[in-house]
Image 1: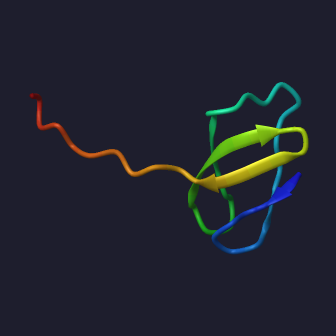
Image 2: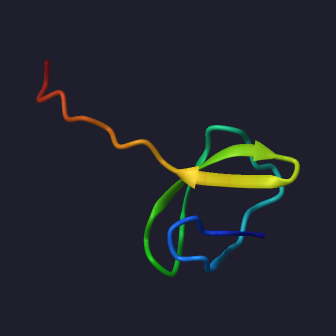
Length: 54
């Protein structure tokens, strides 16, 4: 487990966590990216720009 960077709530993580994986905070809904696994560190996931089919 680690804390959400947005709201501070505990975020439960599974055992085979990988760097770059996206997880959601169950409390605030923020998408979080795993930036390190030992110990688990989360940061806000990057916003994806729409490409509108280009």
